[in-house]
Image (cartoon, rainbow, N blue to C red):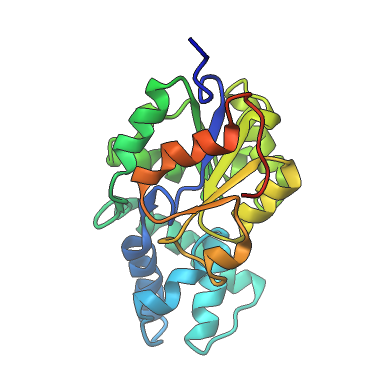
Length: 236
């Protein structure tokens, strides 16, 4: 019997907008800060694309959209307040996207090594995954503080792949935005993007190897990319 093409492969996942719909709690926290500063709140649909490059960038973009530019000291103070509030409300409304848990279980059952590769801080990422019952499915969680440089720098993905004992030529990054596309391409990994995430540029325009609309499509997409011979097939 031929070996399963997923056996031993590394499937790394972005977190916000890919595994979990975190926008309600992230933007809710941003709006708490805006209200404290007597600025208007941002609708979720407007602020959703600001997620994905870390909390500082989200705060800067959010305040800019609300009509207030920030200097570094002000951003630092707001960042501390953001983290304190968000930590207490990290899973109030955040939920895994439909089919996420089942898809992860299916990949693990076929021998894939699963990792999280996120620009969110590691402690917050682990807290969120634990709160949603997803943490045990991953062999490593590599947040912004656990890598030499964050996505789109390829070293972030390389760190995640190394952390689970994998090889880059048998690795796929599943994400939703340009940061994921940049990291995967620079690292020479396969790239699957979801159509339902948080991105300023539509996922289809980022030219992933495969674009999926639901987690039910993920296993077949990974198998197609890895191929029977175990090599990344390239753009499809």
